[in-house]
Image: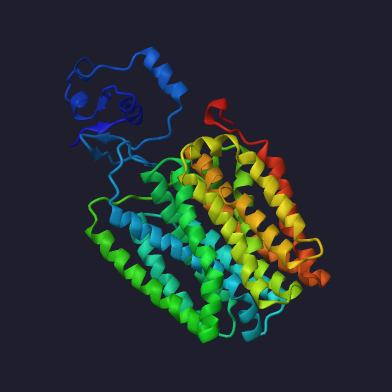
Length: 447
């Protein structure tokens, strides 16, 4: 019978102390406490004040099994450059794939004869599917990415052969949600800083920035169904290669999970309510703006160049702000200055409601993207620092599906997409108010 470390022993191991042993030594009557020093009262008090995140116990370099909620190991394996680049490629492709339905929305609306209500329902299915996908993150993260990449291939093939796109859009969103959540958790466990997540989302933003131009160019040479078949081919290849890489990998990282009797919301216990709401609002506003901006520009600017340029300016602003994570002192900036970013989002979304000129629309789109860029990864990092879970990804996905859907519903009810764009404006105002209720550092106390 192997020697097993208690969870308390693992905590003191992380503080540089030798752990308490329980198991056969005690059962055989040996004096384990005289063999291995125990932590003193002062050391226990320091461990309590340190408020360290839960660490999977390890003994002689091997993980100890039997705990109900293992999370990030104390000593993380080195990530090879090949694996990191492959992860970046997949996350880049999720950026292209998630923005693709919004970038193709004018063509899809024409090809499938959709109204604003039907188009909003399709975007709702994509983002709600992404939220459901976050709940499917169980087991080995690398294999999950491979399996759900193949599901993305199947969803794209299905969408190319049907005249009712809502259900394939739901499956498409589920695949993307699982792949994005698995990749984010994998990256967070390998690299703990907020700037690392912002850099990962910078790569995602590159894909989102290129999506409108790539989709528009593809539509010039083919049909929406041809574009979907191209996406199916990519995800089939990516899923197959990722599966082979996961089988040959010596290190397998699993997703954090709750206890068997724990509810989903218990995954957020101890996280401030203002932080939770702000974290899920940021991607909701991003989804509403990115999903409807092409149609909004097409309807009011009535110029193909502006229809392409408006979402491209949005993603260019988002990309530029996330690129700042590569600068020295990025972590300090995200801790002390992020509260003012929602003000840029509010100003940009409100500016879109004014009488539109081409230059003004492009400026407002850039401003919204620049303000939103670091917000979600920075807020997400704060949540995961307190408690690693996939519940926050699910709630963010719900917001990402609800706000585009509400935008379409308001537009259909008022017969004006300009009124529909009031939805992200209200979300930006709420985010700005909540930003000042979120603690900037974990040392200010825990809720």
